[in-house]
Image (cartoon, rainbow over all chains, first blue to last red; front, side, top):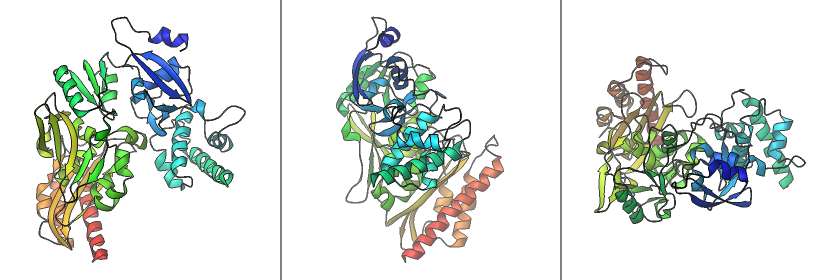
Length: 174
Length: 291
């Protein structure tokens, strides 16, 4: 584990900690954590994966969405200890600067972000949608994203970006 | 926000969970989907000494119909499972209609039906469905199991009648007498908001005849409202326009709405009448097509 993680999350000796192993973006990460640690805090402070944002911190906004065993969850509303033995995917697992994921490409092409704060959550929810439904209607995209809020209100282009990605991914799947 | 410190246990069997709850002696909370509990822990509205996470008890992850048509929903059945279930879509229209309207799509991947009912939020969608469907909760404790009708299960806002060492293991919807018809319509200002008003309807029908009826209302009182008079007016009838209008009026009369930022009391009452009529008219049309 990174030293930052231990520094922040080494609890006083009388507090029981749990050893967990979580597969994050395909890589097994092991940590001793307090059970009350939230998943989003383990990702951000513990693992330095700051692409996952804390928005409302009250289960409303979806900015902290990650994929948990492939399904979107609000990582501010899960305990990190619950991820023991499970797969977590964050925006850092989607693509690289050199090779963007088609969904990331779509957000770039269709100007699907303004301030960008909600974007990682939007993209991961979109990824889960497209895995389940590679050819969604505009309405289906809107419904799927209805748990992710954009305070810039840039929904129109976010929806376009996801549809762009769906087209692109279907074309490349041949 | 962080929750207070707690001891965390993740049992792998129901028996082990009950043993832990017994050890906890009233200071333990059960964690299922966590979509209400974890926000409450973070806000420190709840600060239990122990959290008993039941997510590893895989035997609780089911929903199924018995041979006689009884529907059983296990404590780990998530909203999303019901939303996407082919057997729910074809056989239980009230639940099929409500599932996509619970909270938002991301909350639905984690949150559970039974957990929502246990949470006892007076604005909860599932409590109204359970009431319209005349469902009950099966609670398991050290001395065995007991069945608790939904009307007796919720004691008040955020309170249920479970003993500290009882686990709600499943929700049960009795088999319909005939064919199950029904629906759920909710008005919300935006996805994820509490209901401005919502109506759950569940009818058991033989052909055009109503054998049993349940109507329950969300968001228009201090708790879920059982519109028993409205439902009673339908039993024995055949959903004629007059019967539907009478039921809609009785449902609106049963509502106890308060004016607030979501709308005036008279507006909410109007919504209840409109939604009741809309669901019942839809059922009458379905019946006509099926006839």
